[in-house]
Image (cartoon, rainbow, N blue to C red; front, side, top):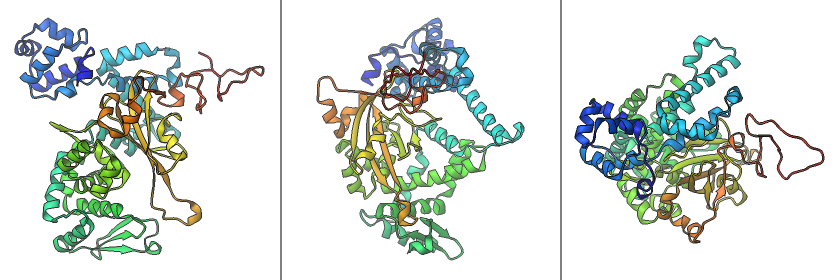
Length: 474
């Protein structure tokens, strides 16, 4: 909050949105705030920054979260716009980064309209490549992007599921260290469903299967204890709390069946995380341990990835945790999970930067790696990453799936994290310069570059050989 207040705070679109939600005129809001209508008009059009005094006046007059109001989200919008305007189809427009920044800061509504248009364009292009009629494109399934966008809009926090998890914990009489036994007994007593651990030759590639005809939930023997609890808790959500999940899905307004199904699975997992790591207790423990993920894992009998996931959900008003972003990447660099937060937005149409710590984590598996990084736009943040092993359901020679899970936040929160201490101890901490993705990054002297920037022509000179793979023009 202090960092936000020390800079110029442009809140025009947020102020306008608040006024429209309240259903009041500029004149009435100006009167309630003790300012002139003309000054309020300048504020709403981002022609004046909001003062600290006025910001607090807003908090006293209206029921709003000052932290959210003061947060500058233009950087996140700028990142997405840069990615879009790097598309070759828009190369002739030749917008500079400054142009894009001004668009995001001064006209966020128009900027979001451009994002929506580009998403529609991507959908239509995908449909054309698949030989589909243009009239079918509105219903073209985009479940992963749809669900990801909804989670970010909801700040990955669902009070109804938090309340449901608390109610379930009481009804099932959950005891620390005995969750699996307690949940199994609860399912048997409450729903007449038994739980069975089954061998891999029976389960095959399945980790969990609810056999409704036989009244049983089968879990694969390859699951570790935290994974068994998580899978069982997810199934409890689908059996006993489907009404709450359905209400959230209906409110999301997703068009495709696939998107709704994916969101159902995601919300069941959210319930499981809330059940294993109760909100108030977990938030307190996270703050007391300074977000020591290993210690939190032992305290709540949860895996590294489960702890990282749960840390991204601590967004209850008046009881917020650090706004973390989350990422999971495989050995080939493909990002299978990502959740942006607090203005940090990463590329949606490509991989992440090779300089970034998630990719470095594969060098020493099982060890937590940390990094201070800086984007081209000046955003600085702390990231920690560690590899995690997924259950192997195939033959030994297929290999065991290995992923790197990363958790990060803006620099202003780094001192609340114990793992950041060693990086922050010098008077001038070192920041690793990274980009959104190679296709969007303008850095020329980068040995990690795997592709040239979009819209840039390649240069070839037999008499010169640089260290990187690509040389390109301006």
